[in-house]
Image (cartoon, rainbow, N blue to C red):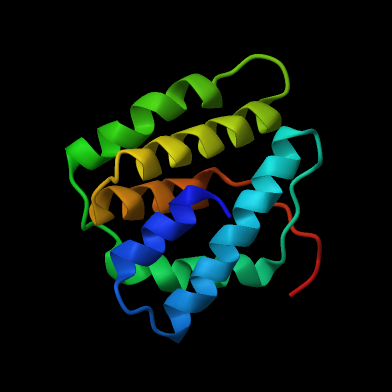
Length: 129
């Protein structure tokens, strides 16, 4: 499991059913990002987006510019990476997530990262869900 999943779990305290479902989704997404960084195409059910939005909606806007800077600064280099852009983005998201987990970023920084993750993931669907 990616270390950021544990950090998000810790930040949530006592996760309810929605939070537990999102934590499972987040773990799956990090596995998909690993596969994408290795060259596989991104694919996830449409229901994943809806679940992520339900989780993020009450947390949206709780962050400030400092939280955004901790996330956007490191991601900029990867989103403009040369070569295969989807692979570069996947590697960047994985690396920034690991950095945020390592520094024990505050919950609001994590929420912004998850919001940014949601906006950066490819929109294609595999048709499931």
